[in-house]
Structure formats: C-alpha cells, structure tokens
Amino acid sequence: MTVAALRSKDLVGIETLTPDEITLLLDTAESMRSIGQRPIKKVPALRGRMVVNLFFEASTRTRFSFETAEKWLSADSLNFSAKGSSVEKGESLLDTARNLQAMSPDLIVIRHASPGVPHFLARHLKAGVVNAGDGAHEHPTQALLDALTIRQRLGRIEGLNVTICGDIAHSRVVRSNIWLLTKMGARVTVCGPPTLLPARIEEMGVAATTDFDAALEGADVVMMLRIQRERLGAPLLPALREYARVFGLNATRLKLAQPDAIVMHPGPMNRGVEISEEIADGNRSVILNQVEAGVAVRMAVLYLAASEPGAPTDG
Ligand code: CP
Image: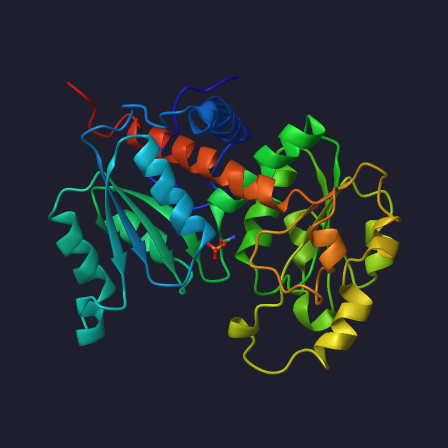
C-alpha cells in the first residue's frame, strides 16, 4: 500500500517509520533532485513557512544541506547556535525552545549531543521537530540520504548485502541505517573491534563480527564509519595505526566485496584510519553523491513534515 503523507508532525527517527513512509520520503527526494540542477534553484513549496535550525553540536554537511534545502523550497530560516545564545547564560533547552516557538516556526531542526532531545521537544512543541542527530541514538536524514544514494547507484535496497564497519557503539548513523535497511529488506553485517561492538546488537536483526575480511565477502555496499574520538570515554583502542591495519578499508581489502560494490562514508572522514586516500577518492566511492542526495532528502523531509495533516497549510 502506498501512502501520501507521514503520520506524524515530527521526524525523530527511522525506528518508528513504516516501509511505506520510507518509500514516500525517498520517492519525494527523488522528485526534488532536479531542483538542484536548474539555473534558478527555487520553488515556492514552503513560501511563508519558517524553519528554525537549532544546532547544539558541530555540523558541516547536515546543517548546510538543511539550510540549502530551506532556501531552495523558499522557506524562511532562523539559524541558532548554542555559542553566542542565552544558553551560555544558563537558559535551559526547553526554555530556549519555548522562546523560539513563541516566534511561530512551522518546523524545528535540532542536533544535540544528548539522545532523546528531539523526542522531548516534539512532545512539548507545536512545531514539527526534525532530528538532525541526537547523541549516539539516531540520525534519520543521514540514513535516508544513504538509502537514496544506494537506490540511485544499485537500483534497489531489497536483497543487498550491506557491511558497516567502524565505531558501531557510538554511531547514530549505524542505528538509523540498521532500522532503515532491515525494514527495506537488505541484509546488514556490522563489524568493528570488540570494544566498539555493542552487546546484543544482533537483536536489531543484523549479523555482527570482528573479522572485517569475512564481513566484506560478497558485500554490495561497504559503509565505513569514523572513530568518534569525542564520544570515547576511555581509551578503547590500542592505537589508530593498529586500527587502520585491521579495520581500515584499502584497495586490497575492497577486492573481497562484489566487483561493483560501492563505498560510503557519512563524513567527516579520518583519511588513513578507517579509509585509505585512494578508496576515499576512487571511482567506487559515492561519498560526495551522499552529500548531494542529502539536500534532496532534506527538501523531502521538510516538505512532507510541513504537509503533515496537522500542520498549517497555504490558503
Ligand atoms: N554526516 C554528518 O552528519 O555530517 P556533519 O556532522 O558534518 O553534519
């Protein structure tokens, strides 16, 4: 059954989406892609709507692609950074959000280091809330842009073997990707050192291994994740050089995957650690295609969230 709208005013994670909602988001993103190829990159779809970008954590790709998406859809944007705001004087997250809500935004895009913050705001605010990454929990628009990239390059998601390697324990990208890829019928294998593989991760419907070479055999998609040094509470790795030797993707290792396998990375990359220079910049890499897909996906998310049955509409 196809659906024409999302069930919620918020996009807080992939976990709660149905496969039909994921397909709707990807199909809408596909139809939005052509906007970026026009000489005048603007459509009136969100004219008169206001979006607040509330970033409490660093970002390059997510933040700028949301801002680009908002401009291309003719929305009015307010950009908030914790630095330079009254958060520095001790104002709470909820008070900050309530004050922004008083300015009548239609949507709030939030990135925060604490898991669950988008869900908390979604419960308290009238505006639709879009999760742009919450701690090590979810990064739903990243998983959607990854899925769009896979679909564009390989024509489908169902039945593919996807290997994800790196810091599985601290990655919101992997959690959202596992929800999305398994809902859409892919087989997912996660791989990393034992200290960075969460216990019972198999309960999410994936295979788990510490043997990267075995995980690469027959893979259609190889997704590399960075070591999240900022989230490592204690030294969990002996040395980055040793990590690169055992878990780094290089040309020799990539030969274990399917001959047409694509290589993905959400960024930012640690070149020479989880991925070699030649693979990052090689012809199997779709890393910059992911960034391009990110703008289309964020246009689709903003458009569908603003069109949600409970959201205000034109006229
Ligand atoms: N992939 C991703 O979330 O990148 P940024 O942290 O630069 O937004």
